Length: 442
Image 1 (cartoon, rainbow, N blue to C red):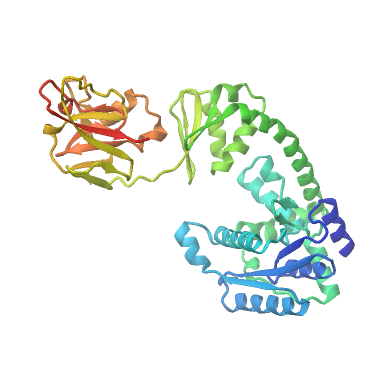
Image 2: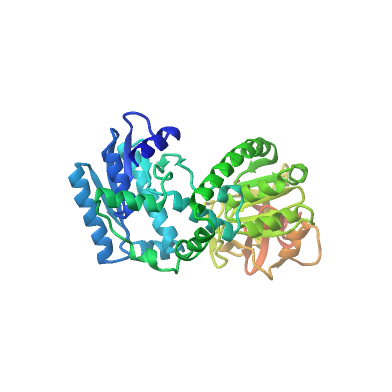
């Protein structure tokens, strides 16, 4: 086991001589085996343990064992207790995802603060197989089928060469103490169902299944790397960024030979599932206007681009009062306000980001708010009223930008659709003496 451990580290260039390593030790068999193996090597290391407080006395027992062993090995120990349930509720996450985020964020913090060269995690070959099957069940691209990498940035996984059975045998052979997480026996999580129900059946069909899946993961990692080089070059051509918008040229996507794979791999990074990326692919050959949503992003199939932008939750009830003496508004959008006397040399600023309004028609305080369904106004140059929603369609405002359109309102009437058009009733005329000028500072 020790020779295989050293060989795997050297083969995958996980560590160099004299580098410092932070070991993530939970107290389970895998991490206790890793702790023992590192104690036989020359690398300087410290131990980090997370107490997630999810199993009451069991969690405390795990911490006590790790504290005991770190002391026996004479290694520095870092322990942190988390209120995992509270964090999960506040961030709308599952317990598993919350725990993952908490521990990796803390490991990165320790690593940066204390100058560790690597963070060692005790994932094994069975974890690779389980991850592949989980992703295959959910639907995935090459990335999801490539399993778990031996290195990802500072994170290294030096036990990926060993199966869970091999690790259990090593722990017994060396008489190592370890703790069993009772929640691993429950099948309410998909990984546990794969581990406890699915894998035993598949191993009955193929006793070498774990090795086979790990070998396949290796091939797929190489395939991903090979195709990834082509995809990276293509992204330089197809992708552009305008502000917070990520744009992908539809013409280039249609002509690209790996377009379906590119869409699955690229847009999964924005949180779009495989089922949705399949629909996004189909939208390339459909009419503009289709919209797709993930938890964090919105995508619109525009005329020439697939446009991805972060979800911005607008509070429709939020409004800002603007008084007669107000000269600057900072939130929710920046406005600069000035009063101008109409003289012989006065000229109206026709920039769409600037509104020239007849001051005498305003009733203060006026309001700034997000437009709402049912809003109507009389666009400058027209006689009849028009719904703001219809006006935005006529102006060809992309779907993903409509939620961020604001209006200025006076006495219940729309004065200005900000950045687009002033209401005809408030426009400057020959009788105007004072111009209320509002400029959007983009």
